[in-house]
Amino acid sequence: MRHPFDFSMKGEVMYVFTDCRISAQALQALRTFGHVPIPCTPHPALDPAIASHPDMLLFPCENGIFVLGGHKPATGVIPQLPIKQAPAKKYPHDVLLNAACIGHYLVCRPDSTAAELLQYAKEADLTVLPVRQGYAKCNLCIVSDHAAVTEDASVAAALRSVGIDVLQIDAGGVALPGYPYGFIGGASGSDGTHVFFCGDLSLHPDGKRIAAFCRKHAREPISLASHPMQDVGSLLFFQNQTD
View 1 (cartoon, rainbow, N blue to C red):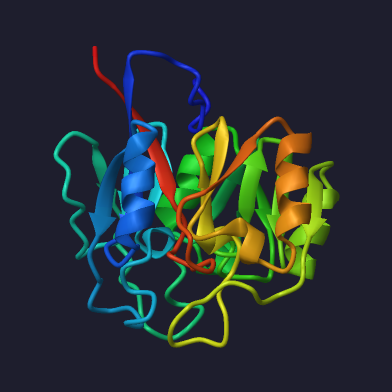
View 2 (cartoon, one colour):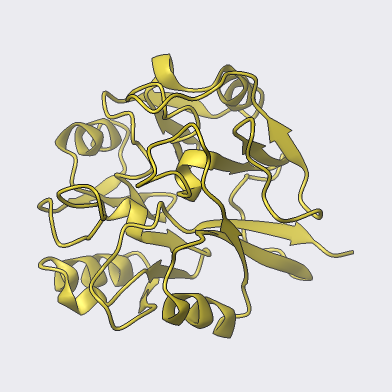
C-alpha cells in the first residue's frame, strides 16, 4: 500500500487545501510552486475563528479526503469520504478530523476522533499514537516522516517515545484572530520537499531554530508571505494522479 503522504510519484497534480481567508500573497506563492490551492469555506457548526481551517474540516488519505458532514470542498476530482458524526463548537467535540499522520503513526486524541478515521488507520496499518491534545494537527508542523515541530509538551513526549525527532518551541509568535495565539502546525504544511510557512518565518521568535531543523531533515523552509506568521488551520496537501 502506498503511504498516504508519499509525494514522490510523478505525473500527478498537487492540490493544497487552505483557509479561504489565507492572504493573497501566500496563496500566490503556493501557485508559483505549481500547487493548486483549494480554499475551504466556513462550517456552520464550528467556532467562526476556526470554521474554515482545513485541519478542522478535512483529513487527506490514500483513498481521498475525509470530510466533515455539511462541508463540500470545491473540487470534483478528489474522492470525498464523509464522516457520520456531527461536530460541535465546544472542544473537544470539534476535533473529529484534527489528527496528524507522521510516518506510520496517526497522532490524535482517540476519544474525540471520527470513528471512520480510526478505522482507516487500522486498515492502512497506521499505529494510533494517543495524545491529550485534541488539536493534534494544529500543534504539529510535520517536517518529515521522522521529524516534527510543536509547542505542546505532551505531543512532543509522545513523538519522542516512538523515536521521532522533535523540536519543541515556545508558544506564541503565530497569530490567530479570536484567540491569544495560534500554533506552528496550523501555520505550516509540507509537500514532501519544502515546509511552507504562512507568513515570514524570520519574524517568529524561534524562526532560526525552525529553519535549521527543517534543513537538518532535508526539507527547505519557505516563507510564503512577508506578514507575521498566521495560523490558517494548516496547509493540507493531496496528490492526485492524472493518468
